[in-house]
Amino acid sequence: MTVKFIQYWDVLSEREDEFSKFMVKSYIPGINETRYLKIVGFWHVASGEGPYYIMEGVADTVKNIHSLLQLDEFKKLNHLLHFLITNYKSKLLVPTGPIEGIVPKDQNYRFNHHYDVIYDKYDDYIAFMKDEHLPIMEELGVEMIGAWYVAIGPGPNLVVEGACPSVKIIMDAIGSERYRLLTAKLLTMVDGFGSKILVDTGLLH
Image (cartoon, rainbow, N blue to C red; front, side, top):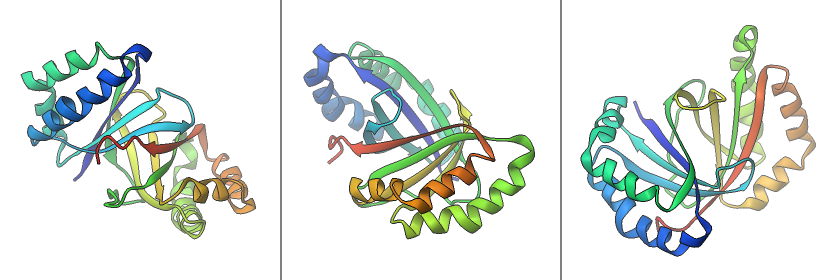
């Protein structure tokens, strides 16, 4: 079972160059070398609430994440990171239905939604996602690549991920009548709805 460890932060304005060098030379390779977690995405939020940077790591098990957090090397890297950033948050995400999580191999843009499902609407929500939301979003050009439950960290409790090769596809989807009607129906089943458009920082490539 793939799980995700997501870290969020804002970079101190006077430390941006130092931050980029630290990420490329120390933080990302240092995390990957532990073999407990692989950094697969590093994004900035082009639209939606902050923090501005999001780092996405995947692991085979929750136990691997726990082992990572106990490592002296991880503690050292995160200690050094905190001299360069502010507004740090983290989340542990585990897969939930009805989308099987994947990590696209090609460089992509993300269009993510997050929300809480209303308690007595859960069955309606699952059916809606399978029968309407997933196929319509993919017809609009946004591949749905994962649905995740926030096991540890701040809510909302569900994160649904979409990916596509350009921001234009996302903007065209958002501007369509089909997306407006789809979102209006979703909003009858969820609370705390929000969305983010994520753009690759380029620091992984």
